[in-house]
Image: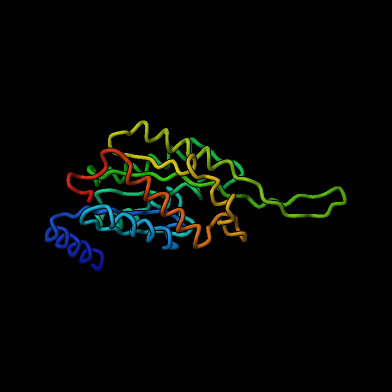
Length: 227
């Protein structure tokens, strides 16, 4: 009942406001941490006329997480014009990454959203590089921990780009991995405790980079949307 009332309130809001450009960001813990999406929001609301921005992040989320009905319902209740999807980090955080399974999960998410929101444009953000923790044994059988670059992020990014190429009409891609994938590792902006999450300055940088590239994407906004 509460979710139904929320949906009705949102519908009334959009009717009164004349359907402002509604942008929603969904994703994993990077989005759930708030600094990143709020940085994106700050920049986009300065450049997109009547922009209504919201975000929904879930710690540990992957594409299958957002295929769950309760999470899809959250997206559907907002009815975004543009859906920014920052997923992939958890999908490819494994010793063995299966691109076929990833593609299937991404397709399932896309189809579920597209079936209910046929007009929405999806903007996929590829994951930046992180590191795996790995324990090795020396010749004297002593164990030590080392951090190894997780190259699966590049493979995951390639799959996201390929998916966009097959759905050029209603998807866009911000290939953050190709443009800025190593920025956080090289500049010490990744959290040294897990080498996956970023520091606050790191998330501000990520949000700035993503927002700036978002604003350059072609045929994304409705007419008169950009200031």
